[in-house]
Length: 280
Length: 155
Image 1 (cartoon, each protein chain N blue to C red):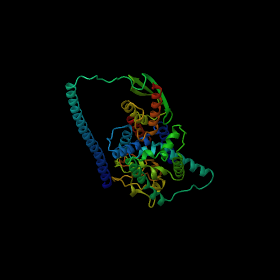
Image 2 (image 1 turned 120 degrees about the vertical axis):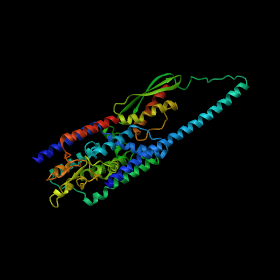
Image 3 (image 1 turned 180 degrees about the horizontal axis):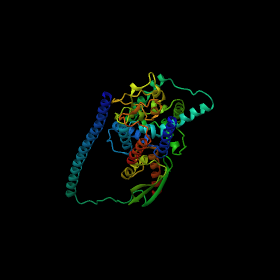
Image 4 (image 1 turned 90 degrees about the vertical axis):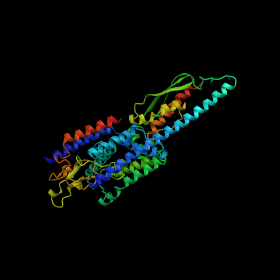
């Protein structure tokens, strides 16, 4: 019964991800374009105007402050791509009866800090006005070009190689890019997230020594306790932990909500679509 | 609780700093334009004085003949996802308007950013204006398309 329910939730999530991948694929790059734009304007001593990129940045940050990183888990094109690659690779390994390679938990924890360096690096390069001249090294450019059906990739060899490496990482570790490299993820994880809809757990009811939720989590998050104002910055709201807990101890900060109700998920997806339409 | 407030205060501080930054720049711009206006007035007064003293000279620009022939000209170039079509309008030998007629495969947010180049082109009377950071492909597409249209417009 529970397994079936989990399957339904996974399907709903996949459907929402596909929808956003098809119709709002540039939200992530546009929002990060806002970060680069602001850094560049500051560096050049120019006024920061309310452009489409800045609006995308503000809109997504506002949404994340209220609902947590629902955008990352359900709507980001790059995140969905990673989920797809990871699922396909695991399926392939299962078919071939091979054990998929895995990164150790400690290595993952170390790599999680790299995204802050990526963010700082790109912000500094934009501030100094160097970033626009570094064409051909941004893996996102290649990804969005290919997605838009533009295959004229001469001069993009370094970026294509980086993208291939990222794809390999995505196969091995769930949410490899989001957790370790995404500069927008770095921004999101530094935002103050309201505890109302962020996930918490009632630890005192847990089976002794159980760490099912943390092991199921693509970010190995240890969820904060009930009533805490802390939220997990690396939580993508993928909702896998909610279904994994044998005692249903995981729920939103507002306890009446578990967090993976189909209706609640659709409401958030709808609200996000509203934000994305408003800013475009 | 502590972490939450620390993050909130940092975010508020960043937003405040950015607004303050903009306000300072706006103030400077206003001062600049006031100073320029004052200088222009002075120069004008000077000119009038001289004109009154000397005999009225043959004045006026020969005007209306730039290097372009009047009309509407189309240009196209590869943008981000596909072709960008653009139309440049020449009036009195000058670039009067530039607009995008079709860019089906461009992302709206990027195209909107890059479109900021069109008024800049009219102002500069040239296709050679700065590209928009972050929307490089669309920008370059617009630039090439405009250059192509202007080439056709040359006398």
